[in-house]
Length: 333
Ligand code: FE2
Image (cartoon, rainbow, N blue to C red; front, side, top):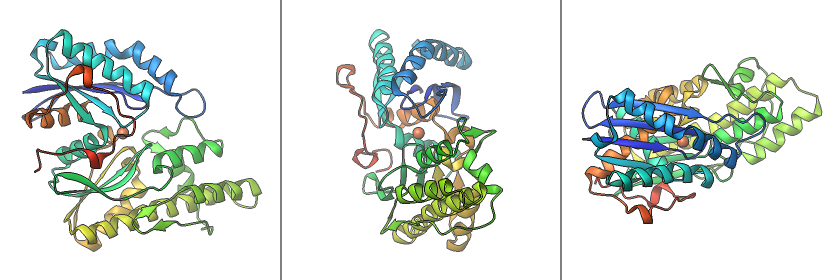
């Protein structure tokens, strides 16, 4: 069985094609919108997607050496994400499903990050730490769904890191050779500054840290590198703290880190330490699939389709705030 998946929730437009047997991935094509300055502009990103979508689709089909007629279902990320971006992927998916008479499969983007992480690390039932530009969540499967055992109360970790280095004048680009500008700057720091460390119960918060760090930067009293170092240590440590508590609470024996921020080596080292201490198996999604891609949508679409779930094109609305804990996961139940 073969699924074609379309991703367009934020800055990446991707088409992936997967099969339900090894080596699973038949095609992986994507393009990313990079804003010339500032953060992501949803309408600009959507226009960029529109201009590139057919080329990416055709490239994926030729990479897989397939025609659209060979595909068993069309999967699409309907949320969560940015409205204008989501609508480009959804429109293409509906058109393909309708014109070629293929089943349309709704995929939650967050579930897709988790499922591709499990596929590529071989973990079966992990505590999941999902860290990206738009999401910061501690998750675990329980009673039919991925339940949230902790999340950010304000901004997501990736968004926090991007906004912070932008404010310091270090970005864009935010990532160079797979490494975030915050990590580059922090690696040169050594002196730890007292800045707000906010963990409330199982949740984290970054807005107080952001404000205090920018204030320290503008005061001119501290080295930029030391500010970055302190900010990174505090932000990453708060995530690791709630992850460790999640492990104790859920008694899971595996720990999976997914999402774009999972590529940070400094963060991976911290997770390696708590995994050793807690004697759990650590899996980190490979960098190429830590970021958004069509393969994860296709793979999750395949799992969803095999569980008998499809959606009528006319009912396939995009859902900008589609929470992971509202999605039934029948393939694990
Ligand atoms: Fe994502």
